[in-house]
Image (cartoon, rainbow, N blue to C red; front, top):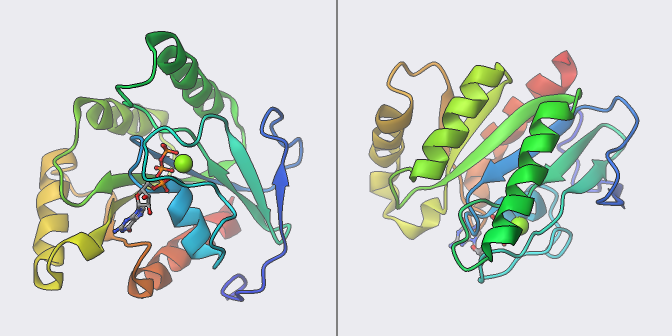
Length: 196
Ligand SMILES: Nc1nc2c(ncn2[C@@H]2O[C@H](COP(=O)(O)OP(=O)(O)OP(=O)(O)O)[C@@H](O)[C@H]2O)c(=O)[nH]1
Ligand SMILES: [Mg+2]
């Protein structure tokens, strides 16, 4: 295991520039407030590396975090934040699309859903975009701490039936509050960054 060491060396790359190296990029996508920035903080054991907020729309730019010179976590803004002006929503949408279309080094897309809610129309658009792009993807049903632990497995399965009835993608529960889920996600990340 190469990255289960909690003492990462982490640096943030200027959000306006895509890194021009060939390190693999592990990118977080999902609607606003679903927990993308918190996911990064949890995985690297830092409370305030990626900025989070209980208000949707916290992340407005693309942030790259260099993890030990092994790979980047890429924190994207969320989509579907209705309080954002139309102009800003379009700007954010363009950011996301441009990055996903142009980056040559994406080794894994981590797509976050909220375990408590059925996928939104925007989630479905994102799902189809990812499938059509052919990029590797894992889907996490986040905020699993918000439902009874006995219901987690069935709920994840229900979400998968809704979005991916062919079951050709991995669906896993996740929670930034509960460490128990991060182990299997690290395994998936490692597998993908090693095979790029
Ligand atoms: N209970 C619980 N709360 C969570 C979890 N993950 C994130 N949150 C909370 O959800 C809120 C939004 O989290 P962020 O990480 O800022 O969400 P984001 O997807 O980065 O949001 P944008 O930057 O707006 O796209 C914060 O109040 C977090 O503390 C989780 O697993 N469980
Ligand atoms: Mg964020």
